[in-house]
Length: 335
Image (cartoon, rainbow, N blue to C red; front, side, top):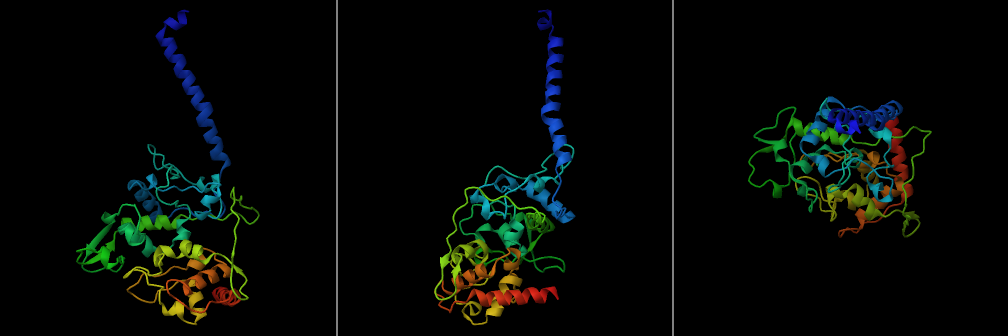
């Protein structure tokens, strides 16, 4: 009983038990995990700009509203091509001795998951406009604006980037809205967020509770096509909007568009697969079809949706014709 009366012995014993359990329960398993986990072979380390962008991401509290984890449930399939695995985070290291922030997996999805945002939305113009004024691209967005990441200048420098903002959101601004280096770095980090493909001999896990996909039957001999409206919302609506009217001064309208209503299918498919930068008053369009690995059937469904929506009444196209153009594009690219 003398042991319990000696406060020094009690303290030392409790401290020894605490340290011992910490080593056994936390430190040794962590070391084991570090030794047995490695990044996937195709992993690309962050560049200096992307790393600075990550620090900006942390400093502005983005992790409070955005996760970076694709869970193994079907509802998360829109955020990534496969569920997340330990190897996706194996290359992350501590920020410094005092701060961990190795992974930015987050705990809440007030905004969408960003695991694969670099593929879902690769265009720098969209990201910059979204940071400057989120409601310019997503009408009901509750994300705060980050105007301090931009400057108002009379002229745009050689290595500077102007943000094309619709007139409705320019207010009384007299000058050009220019992205700071901090904003460019942040966008570089967002563009780097792409799921690394698994090695060829590895099959990704299927999402649990998978919903049965029911393709929409098309008229004529087009065969069964996916849901063009759903594909449009997933791949195109963030810029061209759900109503197809785009954003004046930023992204062109598809309603009444000569490309959509015209008969030049080769131009149409080329725009989707390789991007488009025809006019200075609009931001450049990224290669959505290539970046998102869209199939001929999916692109056909998107084209037909655009040709027959928002008052458009153009002739629909066949998946066989789209596939032929896509094959020609691949052949030309390889040469």
